[in-house]
Length: 324
Image 1: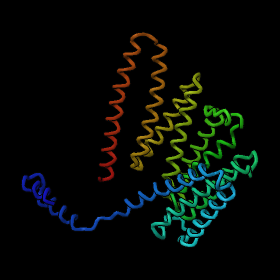
Image 2: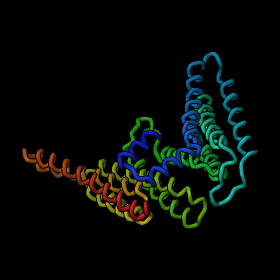
Image 3: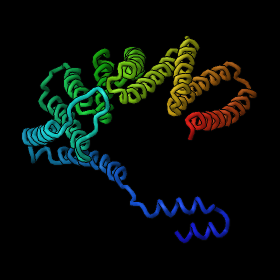
């Protein structure tokens, strides 16, 4: 406080600003979000430690004992959540207490460990790998909606993408780790569009409308990545995919400005910029002379500066429109 009083005496701040600082200094400081932020990595560390424990002591502990332990811990966490959960509603439902979200997250992560361990060690689902992902995916989506947990929803959407990739992709492609396969690219495009559309439906129907951002975030990123992969892999028709990226970026950009969401504005510009850079590089390769190197250098320097200035402009504009 002495520092602020000194600043006031030196006319760096006004009396009104000093009074506000003193008023804030007398009030208690909430550490609610600090504690919640620390709990998330805590849960990840616990589940990671469990995996390391299993890996290092697999011969001494035994598979059956490990599976039973994980299953019991998972069941206990779910029992606690069902007992403490508030009644389901289409609108946002607050957690009954601060530990609830983290116990639910632990239960869901243990569920994935349990199902993965069963399939890996005992091959419960045989060659039907998709079933080993589909069952926990359904449970995760149910938990995300019933308990109103965005973190669990994110895990469920990740499982959905995994399940779709396994389901539509031939086994030999998965074994060869060929992620440039057209099966995966087109599945990414379809699933990305579906998630973005579902986010819109979620908002319009007002069914867990606060989930819309998560659906749209996953959908937009998956769609852009799949379109870029198609552009890179289908070299002979890359301009068609470039136009598709620009159309998606244009729609997302306008939507972001309309809803005043800077995040989606940024990713729409960045993905469009990546696609544009690829086209420019291809054109410079066609020129293939000494001047193309200088042109490329000038382009990347100039476009980089322009990109930063564009983002700064829209950042200020959105803040101004939001009255910040």
